[in-house]
Length: 337
Length: 177
Image (cartoon, rainbow over all chains, first blue to last red):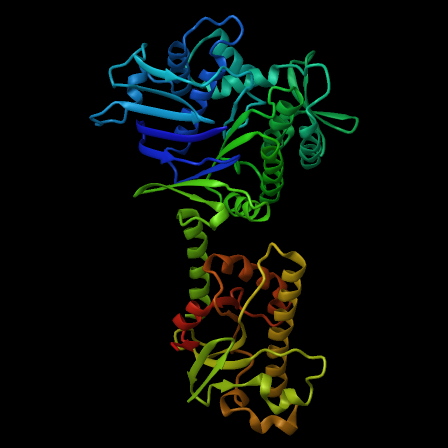
């Protein structure tokens, strides 16, 4: 589990220090504040750690990281990730359990990261990043764009997800911990999403009927992705899942159900990082924290910077909650003034 | 002027002509068996919204409320408040229409002269000490429960309001201790 992170001069994030992380972690802030950037920076680091020394891969951690940063953030050179006008280097530190992984580089860095320290043992589990946009309909386009054409457009989070979904289910029993969650996900879906090898596309299966995925709702595709990754065993109880804008394309009732499933998976060992601007997401996670007496660290960003809190201690003071209260106050004023 | 303490808050001061303690009045005393009632009625002039010259606030005060996560308790609480506010509205209409002639005299002139067809009505719940961020869902839940009442009597869509002690003070319902 990632336990602490510290970023300095990383794109829009001039200084972020987030400690005592938990099984579920929430990032909330306005548009353009760097929520997705933060999740991608953590994801790049985790994928570096997961690819390092895997199988016959002989690349150094620094070589993997350069590729990861280049294809995730898609800039001319990775030095462009350094905050504009910053006098110091970009600095990234992450603690996986008690082991530190850190690196730093300056704005002129192109292909070589000179300063990198890795004390995290190699790991067999996979992390995944679920972007705000759905990928099932674009699955083949993403793979062609990145694997054949090798062009910018779909970053590594999309490519990794498209590849992870392509992975066929392994033999043997599924993780017992996931069985109930999969049933719950399929209950929300009202069916199953399956890849049709002969047709080369994803289809929605409801009873004995099959529909092209194009006619199903965006939210269905989103939930189907998680179901597929649990069923094909790409994810295991040690995986870390990054979910950007969990609420996008989901009805509030589906958000609640999905977060209940996230909470169950988190108690089984998986770690989640969720970025959101939704009142429903914040409120539902607050209730989960209260009901399960679970620490849910939250990092809230606004014009004054980033502040950390814990949903176990109450609703965070931030723009999302403030806006909900403001709408209420506006309504009351309209009625009583 | 009338002031009183209820649910740990000091309500008032209100002009005697504007206030009617409906829960403690003789009209309610004669019918109260099995009928829950709101705390009091208050007439507020709304000159800025012609032709509606006055607005009747039907107020219920509470010192606590369950949170929406405790569902059965929450639903029962909402149903209870809904009954009190709806019955307060009905008894006000019934009295102005002289359906209870024996006790009509206890109603202030402003109520007896109320133009029911144009008067505004507000159904107001005040909860002492309630956390600000729990008010929006509570107001939404109460609005949903009172939807049939609001539609039947053609009340404003925003006629149902939930306030905490701070909101009550801000809108002049209560005064500082």
